[in-house]
Amino acid sequence: MRGLFALGILTLGLTEAAPLTLRFLDVGQGDAILITSPEGKSVLYDGGRSEPRMQTLLRQYGVQSLDLVAASHGDADHITGLIPAVTLYKPRFFLNNGIAAMTQTWQKLITATQKAGTQGLLARDQVINLGSVKLTVLAPPSGMPKNQQNLNSVGLLVQYGTFRALLTGDSEKEQTAAWLRKYPASTLGPVDVYKSIHHGAANGDTAAWLAAVKPKNVVVSVGPNNYGHPTASALNLYQRAGATVYRTDQQGTVTVTVQPGGKYAITTERQGTVRPAPAATPTPRPQPAPAPVTLPPSSAYYPNCAAARAAGAAPVRVGQPGYGRHLDRDGDGVGCE
Amino acid sequence: MSEQPRVAWWVVDALEGRLARVELEDGQFVDLPLASLPRGVREGDVLRMEEQDGDFTLEIDHEETARRRGEAQAQLDALNRPTSGREIDL
Image (tube, rainbow over all chains, first blue to last red; front, side, top):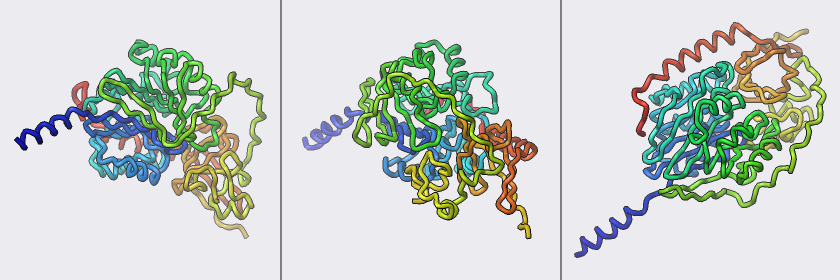
């Protein structure tokens, strides 16, 4: 009788399925999305720009294993955090666009992948089953110039029940236009959660692309940067698409929890709502071209904090001449504090 | 008395509008104005930096770029072993 009671409790426990979680990790200026299936299988799509930051996040979210890591493309703000991920978890696969990057950072990632015994997986149109979660790989369309990483970003469509999410790295207009020609609109959208292309850059999302994707929620993965990300033009596109916008720089890690069937909830690490974009995109004023300098600008480049202090420039904030990530170890936008 | 010139190789990671994100020899990244770099610079280019008496010169090292690109691509091609079937179960 006691045995039957225990069996009853066990059966009840089994009916409570775990959710799918997508975490848009706060990695500062960069992308990193952690996908964990109800069965506990995990994928890391991009890793942000900092090894220690990614190590901290993987510990913080109790990651036990990684089955696959993906580099949407080879830029450092997407691949650096994959190095500790590969080293620590030795995933089965490393999904990539097949175009080697040239940095030491890329070299370090490939060496770590080789050491881990992880198999490289060239992106092609295929399905990866992450337990009960379906990941559809959107391979870079043919005809993209092979010397431009952004235009060869690897896309990932995540499906679980009725829930759909779309991640497309730093793809630009030429690539999304080619995807629009290749896939019927119903393949692409509508999506419940969409990662803003290229941290909200001006050369990422377009009205035509978003008309097909039809995002209900957009997550902008962004941190302090010198590039003006996210741009007002991108934020206005999301607003016109009727999407709710989340930002990792303002709200920290954004977590999407998806129940079996597809009902989902979005939570943020920090309180607060995203400030709305300006009602209209301001007309860009012509700006004078920066004056050419013949040297890595002593006025705008300090090899280390000692040099910045010697020049009286410390602390140097993001957007100020001379700010660089090498001076900003904690990635808070202020160097040589 | 001139000091000996110091030579290093930097790599252009990406172009971001009017800036280029450049990886220095120690693996750190800096954003430099495109206008301060050699004309026609592209992502992936290896730059030869020479510094002497506080003056820098930068030029695209096309030979080193081609050499490194070939090596890196061969390495990735070897890592990307073909998989059979259209679906992968993890």
